[in-house]
Image (spheres, rainbow, N blue to C red):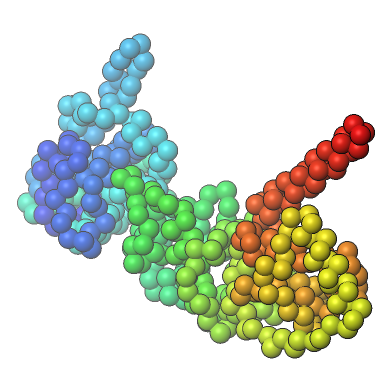
Length: 394
């Protein structure tokens, strides 16, 4: 039989195993903090059918389960040397087996120890603690432990690792991208993300901040291409860059701008546009015909309730291919093509759209913008109905 053995110097008092909320780890570098991880690990290991023993010096504590019926329901209480402990195998209902491995190994690492596979049980020693786990798939977890504890030497960029699927906090996995594969794994080495007592991420927004700020600083062009053009079936294709407060590396912005039409992540596209080098815009003077068209468009927009001339309006030769209007730095920019391609109706639409961006802060392609525009359509329909009713009454 294969045993996974977690070994460290020193001994553990039985009372620390039995009690919740008792942690003697004062060092900020320690992984454990709440004094609950070992209890969770024992419960999950028993739930998975593993056999667990703890050697503390020459004392051996063997763990099992005992059924106890409470209010007509049977619970499997964890036992230590036959003594029923105050928790059941239902502790950590949402926990996966890898999380139990993580807790056993974290305790050993906090005490300067390690973990290894063995065909034999360890020999008890006066100044050693061994947590011995047999079965329950823990040998498989041990062989794949790089998905649970980061291998720093494998980094392809600071705190970014080649085998996807894991999000680490200070080198320890706290989130698996299950159901949404990730191209790479990431380490919150600074501990920005707050963790719950059961070592889960307290805020996924914090995780987005960590990952986005790692990615925008990447200089490796192959890595940049992989994440910038990732599809929305991957985590990288959905990272929310609105949480990112850093400017991108020159390589990142160069590659992203060159292929911006291929980017499917709307948050990334917005971020790239924010940091795109500002083009020198060449203004032009309106012809008398264009001025008449503009005056008519402003009058019509204001009659409908859109006070478009509350903001400065500038007319520029071009805003880029297919772009007829833009809200920028508190101003409305109108491209010459807006007059040439769409005439008065397109000019009205462009003025109103850019006014909405500036007045309400709504972005293109977002739900808030859609809701606002439909609300305005309904408002105008109601105005038309009221006008018809008034005319009929007269």
